[in-house]
Length: 535
Image (cartoon, rainbow, N blue to C red; front, side, top):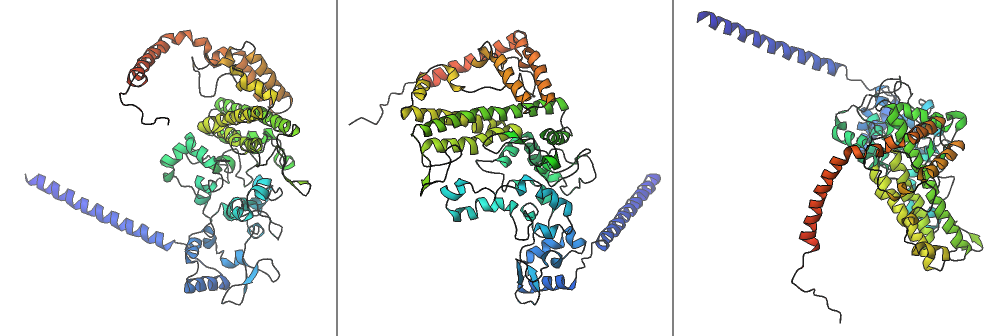
C-alpha cells in the first residue's frame, strides 16, 4: 500500500513538471513569433500618406490591408505605386498635401517589379479585343449609361491606359492586399465569368472540381507558390489551377490564353491562332492544358474527355450554320431587314439585331445558349451542356424555322409539317463511340439516330474531314478511330445480352411505378365540377 502511494506521488510530480515544461515552451514559441513579426519600414512620403489617411479617417481599411501584404513586408509603400510626375495623365495633388500622386496606378507601374507578369498578361485575351470592337449590342441595343457598371466594369480588365499599358491588375488582385488567396478564389473569377452568356462560376460549382472545393476548400492554404515546378498542392483545381498555376511540368503564367486550344466564346468555334509566334500552335496550347489535367486524371480519361468536348464545339458550328442559313435566306426574301439610319447599316442580321424575332433568336443561339453548350462541355458542367445548352439551342432552331413558316417560306412550311424525327437533326453530325466515364451496356441501344444504317459512316466522314482540315490532331484522330473500330465495346451494345437479367429486373420495377401513377393520378376522377363555365 505504501509503495503504491509513492508511485502515485511520483506520477503526479512528473505530470506537473510536464505541464510546466509545455507552458514554458509555448511561451517561448509565442515570444519568438512576436519577435519575428515583420517590421514595416517605408519612406517618409509613404509614412506621411499613412499618417494623413489615419488622421482624416480616409480609406483606413486599405492601410490595414496593405500592412498585411507582401508589399509592406518588403518595404514597398504608397509612394512606390502612386508616385507621379508633373504632366502624367493621372497626376494630382492629394488634398492637404504638397506632393503629386498618381490617381490610377497602371500595369506600367506594376511592371517596375513584375515585368514578366505584366508582359504575359499583355499577351493574353484578357488584354485584348473588348475595346477594339464596339459590338452593336453595346452601341445600339443598350443605352450607354447602363454599360458603365455593366459591360465596362468587367471589361475594364483590358483597359487601354493613356500611358500605353493594358489591363487592370486589381481586377483579380484586391487593391492594397494583393493577396494570392483572393486572386485564386473561384468567386474572384466569378465576378465576371458569370451570368447567362458565360456562367463559368456556375459551371465550375456544378462540376466535381467545384464540389470538392466547396466541401473542403476552406481548409486549403491558397497562398502557395507555383513558380518552381512543384506539384499542385490542393486536392482539386480552382480556376487559376488550370489556366494560370503551374505544376511539375508547367510554369505559372499570367497569360490565360497559353493553354486554350479553342476559341469557344465567338460566334463560331475555331482553333486558337492567338499569338502563335509567342505561345505556339493550338496543339502546343492543348498540351500545356493536358499536362495540368494529368496531375489528377489518367491520360486516357483526359484525352477522351477533351476530344468529346472538341467535338461538341464542332457540332455547335454545324448548328450555327443552320441559323446563318435561315437568317440570310429570310433577309434575301425581305422577311427581315437590317437596322439602318441615313443609309448606313448599324447591324448585321447574322451577328446581331433585335428589332425582328429571327435576329434575336440568332443572337441568343450564339451569345447565350451556344456558349453554355460549348463551355459546359469543356468544363465538366453537364447541365449547361444539356438543358441550358443544346436543348435551348434546339428550341431556338425550332422557333426560327416556325417563324419562317408563319411568314410564308415554303421550305420552312415543309419542315414544320414533317413528322419524321430526323427533322430535329437538319445538320451534319459529330459523335464519338461511348464516353470517358465508362461502358454503359444499355445506353446506346434505343436512340433513333443509331438505328440509321449508315449513321457511323456519316459521322466518320465528318470527323475525318475535321482532322484533315487541322481541327483535330493526329492523336485525336487515332483515338477516335480506335473507338470507331471497337464501337460495339465502347457503346456497350456488345454486352446488351449479358445484362438482360438486370435490365428486366428494373423494367419490372418500372412497371410497378407505372401502374401506381396510373391508379393514383391518371385514372383518378374527382366528383367536383370545374368552376369555369363558358358564358
